[in-house]
Length: 401
Image 1: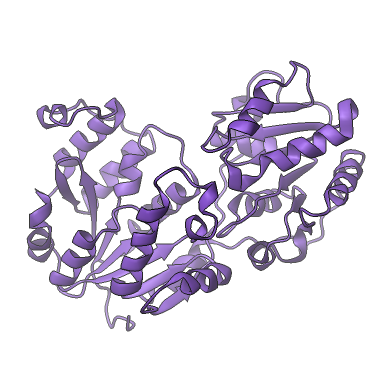
Image 2: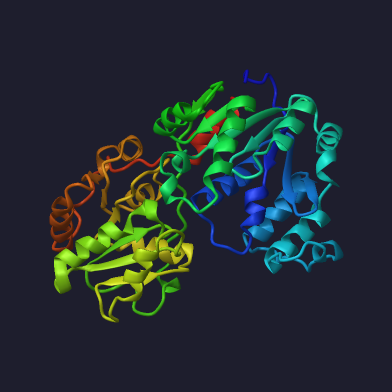
């Protein structure tokens, strides 16, 4: 894309945020919401689009602000409308959210009419932004082109193609199709790291679109230990691992370490919901004795989790693969020590502020864990970890869209 001479209208796809209503926000969810929040502060004409069970809805700036208020809990979701009763098997929270979007919309259409709706409401040259990996279909990308718009897509990673065994059943082929569409049709690809760009472009089987790299911003809630369950944070040294309990995050490696360290090991708090393809780890967690040093914690509030990370002797991050590595970046921002797998992307994002150890050296992990459990963190110099900011991210992205 050429740099615009004046602010073009932007169209943000909100499908992922809509579909995730009622559930805790993951890293990708938070990126889409960060785009929503920032674009609402920009002067350029702004619209939002979302795919519902009955077609597409188009929001103007006021409608997007109303959606943001509901997602943030500042305004309650309304009641489901009559149309929400037509699709069967929909979650109540999603039906209510789709009903509110229809009430907030400036236009809506059946799928076949999407090009006409976009052309009627958006000026030529508008930029369509898809940053959530949802709704990346031939219909949407084709409709944007037919309406004389340009498509910019944020790719978070291509881990489903690199590590298919870690994925949910049936998810790899649809993801392959998305990357093929981006390769063929996107006007610009936004990558969250240089490492992700290199790995993604290696997976493209044809055209390689123009691209930019913009690290994600680290935007932490204010820590609030008052939102933690009773007994937390622990009074003795503890370590945290944050993320969905799924194979890529490699929780089994930590369980092996704690088994080697025995009953005198420090506390390990596993913070995250249970995911998929991980029955062996789930079985091990289910068999833990009540007073075991390993504890599983789910459904913590963002403020409570931030307080828990801030008070930890260290964050452990043995992930097999990452597109960016937001949890360790957040931990370093809280001046919490990080011990992580020796991944190129983590070196790119965290620099020399983390401690790296390959998974092939479990005793290096144990030695560091035991040293950290026995000592408070060293005083931090003024040149501690400088987290990437959303301001820097959007400065890079918006001048190209």
